[in-house]
Image (cartoon, rainbow, N blue to C red):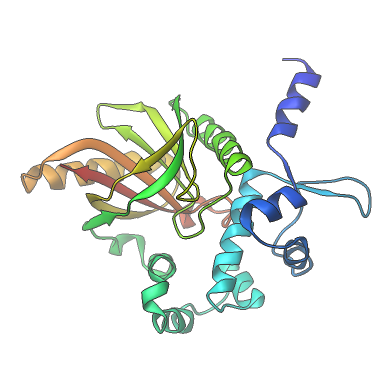
Length: 263
C-alpha cells in the first residue's frame, strides 16, 4: 500500500471536533474543557490553534466521560477514577441514590471495584436496541479492534450515537468465532442499510476482567455451565466492551461482558 493510500485510510478514521460534538450531542467547549483537565488529547491537531481530530478510541473516551459527568461526577473524580487513584465506594453510593436511571453506570462501577476472581455467572436480559451492523472475519485481536473502530466511525458519521445503550459490541456463532458482526448503538429512529432493530433477549453472562486474548476462556466457562445446567443456547455469543483501551493502558483493567444468548 502506498503512503498516500495509507494516509487516506488514516484520515477516514478521524473526526473533527465539530463532527464529534454533533455526533455525541455536546459542545466543542465541553471537549476542549476535557483537554484542559488532562482527560483527553487530540489525536491530530493542525497548527498551534488549529482544528482538532479524534480517533474512535478518543471518541469512545469522550462519550464515557460525558456519561459519568451527567451522573454528577466531577471531572477531577472522573480523572481519579480512570487513574485508579480514588476510593470508588463513595461514588457507587452516590450513583445508587439514582438507581432507576443509572443502572448501567452502577453496574460498570461495581465491576470495576470487583476482584476478577469474584466475577460470577448470572442470567441477563439483553435490552432491545437499534444497532448499525457490519460483518467481518478475523482471527487476530488487533484486526478485530481495527475493524470495530472502522464500523464505529461509519455508524456515528451516519446516525450519531445512542447514549442510553452500551456503545458497541460484537456477536458471533459458537461454532464460528472468527466470523463476527460489529454492532454500534445508534438512535432508535435510525433507518438505512446495515441498521438492525434487535429484540430483547435472555442470556447467560459473566463480567470478564482482563485482556481480550483471554475472552475465549470466559466463553468456555459459560458454555460448560450451560451444559451442566441443561440450558438451551441459541448459539450466539456477545462481547460487550465496558472498559478497554480508551480508559485503561493496562489490559488487566479491561472489563468485558461475555454473554451466551439463550433460546
